[in-house]
Image 1: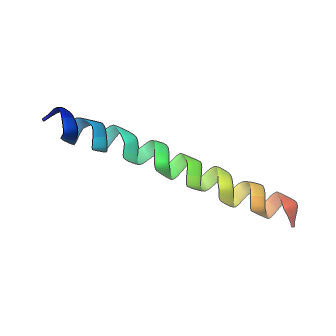
Image 2: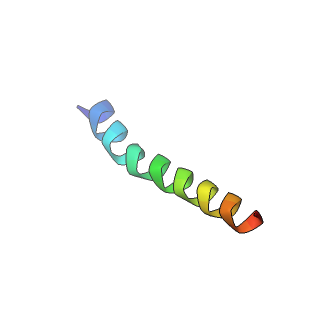
Length: 29
């Protein structure tokens, strides 16, 4: 169960990082 909880909590963090990368790329343009 701990592993499932870890995956569920790490997913939003990965999405946030992806969003930050997209924003930084948009700013560079």
